[in-house]
Picture 1 (tube, rainbow, N blue to C red):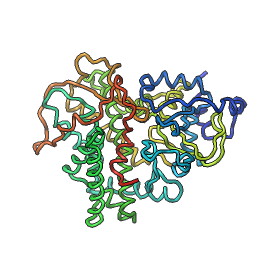
Picture 2: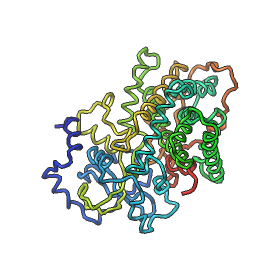
Picture 3: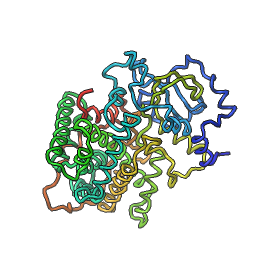
Picture 4: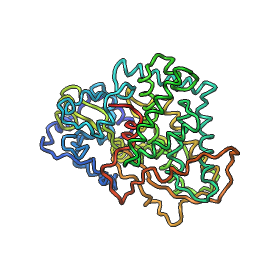
Length: 476
């Protein structure tokens, strides 16, 4: 019999209720268990089958994994909802990578993509305690004040940004919605939030696209992005406004701290919103007729379903043990890396409980515990997704998937950290742009965004968040 959601949540919040079965698992696994190579993105081609296999083999909810091709970079993947929520919520685990035992022992190479993702920096995500609260409160207060102020109007700006992007392709009668729409929407909207003008926002999009592509242009793109974001902070200190960067400066943060909070805002928003928009559009176009009058009523429930069934993040290295602990059938020493498994946790709960993915809000899409996405960030993220999807469907009412495309075979990114489509070709009746000003020049970017498909493994490609943080944050 499936456990009720209330029972499952109660077990998470009351971990002291260790059952006899759980106690018997504490020595179930031999220390020689070979780590699962989650650095190989091809293993997620059928993620549901992978999660089912791991859940059958590791009933304690914790899996030893190899995070990179380097055998020194290992960790522990949480695969059940209870285990994942416990790791995210309990003060037994830290977000501060300076606790990483392998790093302190010199076993993690300096060019490690995992280290690039989580190297300690002065931002709200990678600190605990009073420093975490200081950074988090400053960023949250800035977001809330900006949303109330005349210059902010963040929610009102999303529709305007969406329209200007749609204007760049609406007359063509066809488009590829990941590279031409979903990729640009969160970045250009957030640029307005931070105080960048249209030209600067397009520059950010351009450099992000170049950096995603890698190769000889990546280093130059990295430098230009760093210079642009640092210049924004310097300008806001001299001429403050109502934008988020200015408000954090007013709150007493240093230029370096403002730069890091701004980078965190972009880094934690861009990939999930890009793929939340893309995955939602694909589901709507596959399962519902765009001619149905009630299509727009399906958008919020479809977004919520996607956050459950196809979350933008699958597995994220995000916590470390701070003391000796028995967890999931293993005795772990301090300094062990824990990989938060959003994908397997959601799969496990949907399989073993009566949770309704259309309406249930206990998914982990916005995090959990003290590092969860604040309500201001969650509301902004949902608004970006809902308005972005709705505006596209309203502007292009007969939009449909490209001719001959099988909805179940749409090409996906090969990645164990980010889950989303690499391409979403559509067709529609051509329509005229609605803005009479000069069109935004985004055409040159359509060939630069990542196109990792389900048939072309690219195990050495860095994750989106890794690339973005590397590109925006100066130094190590």
